Image (cartoon, rainbow, N blue to C red; front, side):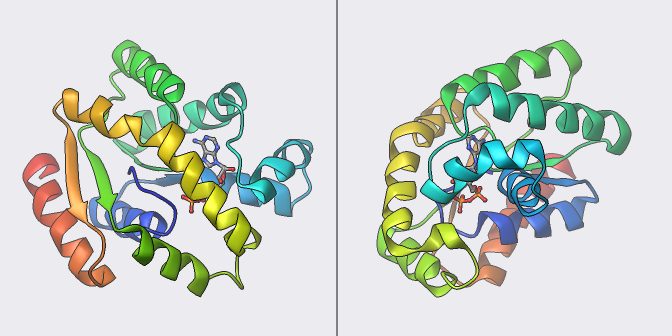
Length: 185
Ligand code: ADP
């Protein structure tokens, strides 16, 4: 899944995982859980999450890659939500994939206009500290700078599936399933 904050990546990621019976590996959820449990890793992550900054690539890779490999091996697949988020992460994921066969069949890109994103982020601001107005804007900027280049990266590899994320969630799921059914069966 590739999407700006507020596009509905978490919701759609869960639905895709349920439909194809594979684990939903959401980097943001994993990191927030570490922070909430005050683990040593969580204490390292807190500042990045609160500020809406990216967690350093080496930390992200050390947490996420093992889970991806385990899911690929034990569950026959995975939905990756929130990773990769930088070109460095994408290249590391590609390297592991070519070594192990845990490669991505499709990259679902949820596209929505910025006013829709801001409206959705504002709507859930009571639930997530990093959805407060100033941090929201910063996360959108971080996305534009570091993550948006992955759209071309995956389009060039022929696996990008662009879906309009502005309609209601059920309609977006329908669009995603229509394409993924034809790819993963
Ligand atoms: P959103 O897509 O709404 O910004 P996420 O739950 O995917 O939310 O991510 C929340 C936060 O977790 C990010 O702002 C960032 O601090 C951190 N994070 C999650 N995934 C990554 C990643 N792959 N690389 C770096 N930081 C990440």
